[in-house]
Image (tube, rainbow, N blue to C red; front, top):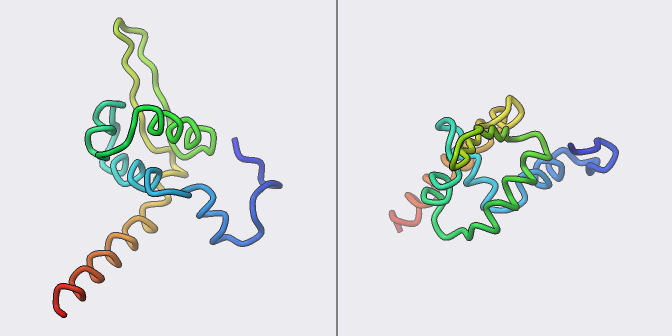
Length: 110
């Protein structure tokens, strides 16, 4: 879990610390649609290696953004979902979506 004393003083920098790269943002985007298995996330995100996806999921779990549920089955089944804290990033992702859509439309109009 993140220690509040190690977070930056600036709230914008704190947010960037938690969603610091495109992979984390895309993981959140996909989990906003509901619970996903590892293979589903990997397929939907695209060009992400298994190692990088695993690393990002572990970090996001440590940060309290996602929940990892392991089922005692053979083969093991693992599902990922957003915590309430992760869900609270929805307005941020929505704003990024809307801005990107508007930017692309502006470029297309030129």
